Length: 257
Image 1 (cartoon, rainbow, N blue to C red):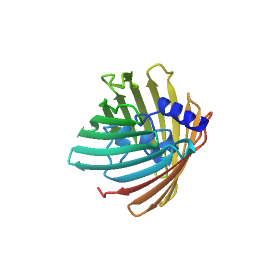
Image 2: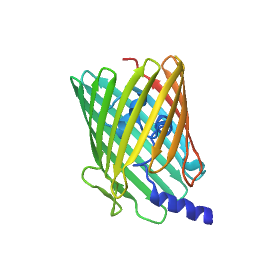
Image 3: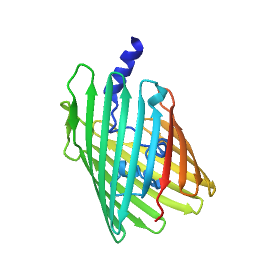
Image 4: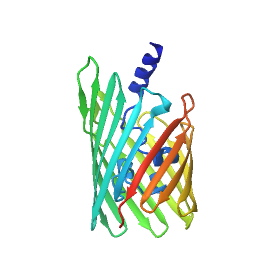
């Protein structure tokens, strides 16, 4: 009984709108510019990488909180299109998040727009839904890239509770052919600024390591990427001050440019 109560409290605190969409993000503390892959469009609609991606995790390693993701992206000339779906499974609570994103690139600047459709089902309670929107802008010059995104621009509510309005900024510098570094800031309503930094290092063409740290809250992430031709597999873990490690695995098929 206590276990169920703890899970329900946790469900009230977290939702799909705020959970990492892939193992790549779990390893990098949501620093998207470290590695190109489809679910980046969930956090930054101006970043759309062609490919198919699927992920699975148990949030904080709790059996009652299984979480699944699927993303597919494509681009035609200057336009990018992305669709993703996330599903949180619990005997007492289910949540679905459909994410639609589109982008347009002009010279070195890319603009993005995203729409989420969140649908929740709770036993013995009425179903709820919401449609938060986000805007994003990215700029790239040689070995440097920066991106700004604003989530829930109209302060949309779910079950009469406001979803978080979040500002995300990240910059990435490619140091050399084997490594790059990202620095990011995130500000959510009623919370302090969160600072993040991370790096990726390619030991071989088919093996890379992501490490990251986040301040407020204090969390460390680490992940490995194994690649064979266009297929990439990422396994990641991330710490939490009070809860168990989260283990995450993602399979990504890259569509050649």
